[in-house]
Length: 523
Ligand code: NAP
Image 1 (spheres, rainbow, N blue to C red):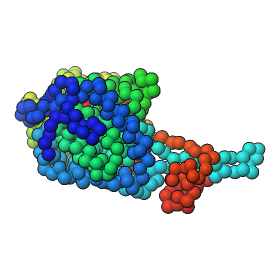
Image 2 (image 1 turned 45 degrees about the vertical axis):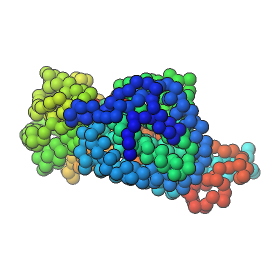
Image 3 (image 1 turned 60 degrees about the vertical axis):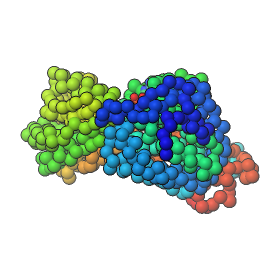
Image 4 (image 1 turned 180 degrees about the vertical axis):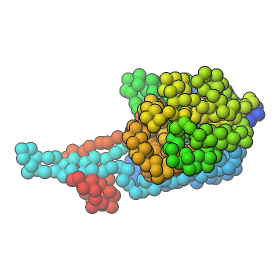
């Protein structure tokens, strides 16, 4: 398939009326052909209006029709073949195996949402039967179902060019909910985005859906994203990226005449706890696994373990020594963009200069690459120096030697919201962990025992979210079937005749889970 550098609006390739830009190969810093044309305000408006017009017919489609659509997108992505993988490798610097795995995950996400639609309980049907004889007042017939919010603006993420991008988790969740998607391509991988977007458009044609169900907007700079979020046809936003970008878009959404929800995943340092028994028994083994986790994908995972907490002492020293040793054999890797590489270099430089911090493993980096870095500080310094709390996006981590369990707990209390917390524990650590759990529950979206936080299962029970700034709204997940909730809202139908009710709420629609008069039933 030829990459033309065009946007896709209304089912057609459209040459952007703004300026042009090129993608860069992050490993060579060479520009990649072709040039991409940036959409202007009129083209953003057109995409959003078409999405609004497509909303009612799209949400009126059956669960089966939308499930088939999602599966058709997955099949069309696979049809792109090796061209997609090669283009994504060139634009992101990520290796083949990672991108092939990510393609599988992207298709798996689409299929998971197809299964969810066919199972049907996502609509959360509730029926409170009429009680005409109730005293002092009769109760009306009340029926609730969830419907889509409306067109969703989705921002592709730099660090997952497939699984969190054009047909990634946010898009799959929004489409499953019956919401059209207007997608802002990430300027780091516009060719990958165009290929996947063409696969989505092809699936729309094959499934005979309205062309406005999906649009791809191409361009760089803040104007496109802000114009998109400000557009009155857009009813929700899905974003993964920087804290500054996410907060800017939250500001735009809140300032609209009709404010809309923004689900932004932004910043997390993912605390990693070394409980005393586990540290004594398995410290060196944990250190090796930790070094592999923090350098996976050159540390460019939102769940990267950037903070390690343990009790100071010889076991902690041995862990630090072993982790630094394991990291010393890991070479600097190409980072996703020149901007991310330079932000990483400046982040580790600042930490290395901090007077309360010792560098255990200095980062060696050449242009565009990031090498692993490991730092150490005391619990006391961490508690007093806010500068030590920030995310450094890349293969860096800070070890904090705590004086006591109480200090460890105080540090946990001082943390901002996080996507994950990992607890390395053995049986003898159980009571310490039990005491820490209520704090962790308040701070994070996912608590893991004896695993590594990198690697996020796409499943029904997964939570990939957390209190601010991990996400802008900690009530939801951006991974797994729970992600659909972000793009739904409840509607209640009071005393409507059966003939006027949506199918899912009618008495004869048996076989789908519903809460009838408080009890869960399929009858
Ligand atoms: P980014 O700079 O926030 O960009 C993400 C998307 O938002 C891009 O499409 C970008 O446009 C757009 N954008 C950024 N700032 C904007 C603004 N003020 N107004 C409107 N649109 C805006 O993120 P990134 O390039 O992916 O990575 C940069 C940093 O994000 C990393 O260093 C890391 O700190 C963080 N990050 C965090 C996670 C996580 O899950 N925690 C994941 C990835 C990245 P352009 O395409 O024109 O740039």
